[in-house]
Image 1 (cartoon, rainbow over the protein chains, first blue to last red):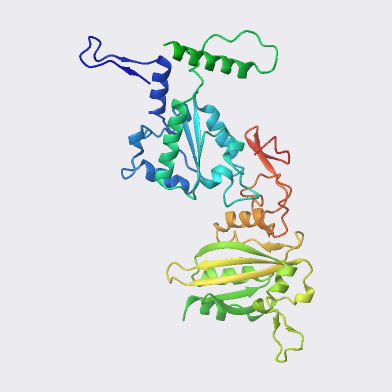
Image 2 (spheres, helix red, strand yellow; image 1 turned 45 degrees about the vertical axis):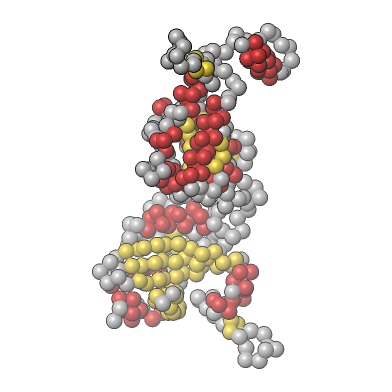
Amino acid sequence: MARIVKPGSPDEGIFLTSLDKMFKWGRANSLWPLQFGLACCAIEMMATMGPHHDIARFGSEVFRATPRQADLMIVPGTVCKKMAPRVRKLYDQMPEPKYAIAMGACASCGGPYQNSYSVVQGVDKVIPVDVYVPGCPPRPEALMDGLIRLQDKIMQDPEPDIRFAKSPTPEVETGETEAKARRDWEIGQTEGGQSA
Amino acid sequence: MSLAEDVIETVPEETVIEVTKQNDKPLIVTSPEHILTILETAQQSGFDHLACLTAVDWPKDELEDNAAWLGFQTEPEDDEEDPIPQPSRGWELDDVNEGLMEVVYNLYSYDEGDHLCVQVWVPRELEECRVPSATSLWNGANWHEREVYDLYGVTFEGHPDMKRMFMPEDWEGHPHRKDYDLTEQQYIYREGGVDKVTKDAGKGW
């Protein structure tokens, strides 16, 4: 992501990157999860927080007890139909940019509660999910792997930060405005990269 | 003498249908008319804790499949004869229409560490599925009975607040009944601070 100046040169100690990439780097390495649990997966999530596995190594140790201060929602456990509106409300209360990890089989697809009267068949019916962590429940290593994958996803996100985005692309009459804007932006990126 | 034996000896004979053992613990089977007498005697004898109040749903076909195990018939000596029907739990298998609902009271004594199980078998049809409430004896029975009402549809007569415990109030059916229809899912959404039920998958979760 960066160009490091050769030792001995007059520019030594200077680190060059784009503001956009620096923001992504900062964002990926200080994901603050929302502190809440729904079932036994939450116990594994707590073990991940503990000193043995220590999620602080990845910058995510600050579990916030309010959605206003969180930018990652780990959904640890079975989402029952009564809980779903509350999960949605908590997610809506989180500030952008926000991410979600579906932890365990229940949150991913309903798990053992297939065709249940009371369980939502996957939290992706309620909120958009970035990473699915399989397991019943997943071990802390699996959750940390999910977190690292989410960090990779954030770093490789082709969308620029909304603050650094170019002004909207020229008027396109078809319904593909968003796709075209994204394509144009990507072309601009590669061209810029080649010319540099 | 254990507390449970004490209860079994104290209660009037006509209130008891059957006395057996279940998991090495004493079990009294009684009728809805006499359940409060038995429970009151048990409470006065020292069973100060209603540990659990729950139910088991027995549709007719499952009763027939488990008839021998439940004591509704005995194996004949000659292999070619049909099983001999016999009454059990206060019921003849032929008198059962839709099935039976088994309401179970698990009692515990803190002082003696003694267990006692009391059962009532009632018809599982919703109108007839009625048992007197034990809230007058143990306040803890309140939520247990509401839960059993919610999930099994057993109405407890004399309960101060007989409404659903977990599911929203306009939920259709009682989910733990064996004939509960899972093909038509119900979904929950919030409106005005209250959980509402819909059958439209796009409206709720």
